[in-house]
Length: 515
Image 1 (cartoon, rainbow, N blue to C red):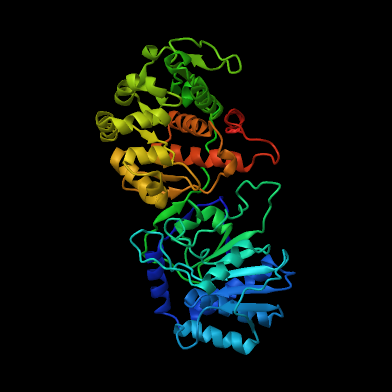
Image 2 (cartoon, rainbow, N blue to C red; image 1 turned 60 degrees about the horizontal axis):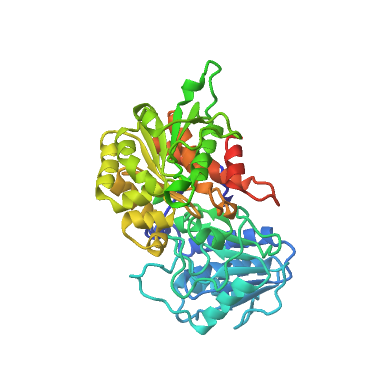
């Protein structure tokens, strides 16, 4: 059994691949073996998570996920724990393995109850073995309407003060997308897990998920991160064989020590183009460009140039005198890594064609993306960059991604892996779809989900910081995919290490990302 932390990469498998791995393993093992292994793993983790629990309540569904819970109940009962089980199945209708585990739980003396216990306290434990991978959030999937008993169990799992251990997946969560199926979403936001910022006023019970056989993408993106909490994994002694991963969970960047015989030219020049002036529309946005520039500077770029679209109003940042201000027409774009769009407003449209066609390496963010979404000619220029071997990274948040793809934000969020891959394929570049479980995709590559970051990043300017970081990694010679992956990981890692009780601001984040 492994505790999943953001310190090494892991392959992720969607539901269909997981079922194939399960079927291949079951074909070589005696009947009931995988369920016995799953139940033992759940029981062992439950013992470790709640060694002093007075009561362990296990909500078991009618299928094999419920069977895993029944098997765990048998082990916990034999260990002398006070186990109470609500089983929504029936011996005459249960799958063979689940029926066998029910019989073993019966023989062990497990206590059965039709309704969730009302007296669970913070020291007790709830185990969610209701549905596993048996639901889909796809609008094309058959709608599964929870019955009254299932709803009662779900409500108890979501609202009791006791910690929760989900077997394989939190019930109702789609293993592929990280979204809840219709009718299963928690009525209140689930409590944050160990990697998520948690309000000191609402600590909430801990949440854990033991993923069985494989790790699923939905545990690490969209609503999955909050719902799953701390993720654990047990492969039950199986192997994926020839099954290709659906995605990867990113690992940390490889260390790249700098040679002593280095100079500022060794790590490239980043030019930040953006920051529409106050005179244009009465909305000065130079701050966004300066945040990106600061992040590039503190991420190790050799030199950082700033071309604000403010008619030359600002010529110096006294807080960061290292930044070199330039007129846009003075930039040698063919020699530069350009970060374009941060705070660019409508003014960015005038310079985008030159930036896209001439920049040696390019990061497109914010208003650059909004402008490209409205002009097919600019879309074509971005595609051509990939054809000419010019590295390009786009960094949209879900609304910007929706504009680029001609979708709604809800459609993008419904399947973040698919949306990111569409962006990469349609724009022939590396796409970074920001959000909970940021997705990094590239044409003809398996996408990756970033495991770092938390809700502290939900503040203005942190996206500009990320764009500058990607630019610095590109300028230092990393490929577009590596630059994006490393920057996203470090961006989230800085937020995870943020001191408790100290507000995260984008300017402070930009200054610490290279530390």
